Length: 165
Image 1 (cartoon, one colour):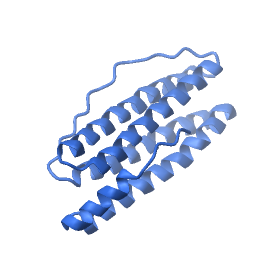
Image 2: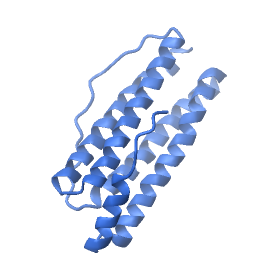
Image 3: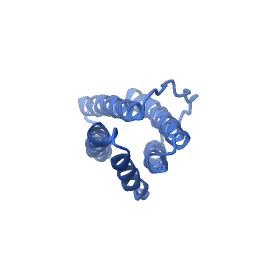
């Protein structure tokens, strides 16, 4: 594996861990606002991001590459409304997609097909993550101002269960 690809994957491990921190921060915001279902949804998102980091960690080790763990930045978002974390979540997923695409393109450019194949799953996953985030934001915009509908949406999100990759 070329150094550039290993460096990008190491950076992505950090970005995935930051994503977990960001989603835990969002979960905390919803817990503080009495929406345990929304909190559950973001707690599961955080677990998924940690899983993504661990998949990359293991991939690097499996390819005899050094894993370099860096400082994880503190989440820097502030939320004024119940919809704010959802909009920030969608924005963040689009950002992560761009990062994965950059690694994919770099690996493809040097014919690192093992890394390209490894990243195929992440490409699909990011499509799902963006859709889920966009759908959730749409539901909030449609129903979030109505307390009964917000309650039902909260119940829907509370039913989400964690499924490891």
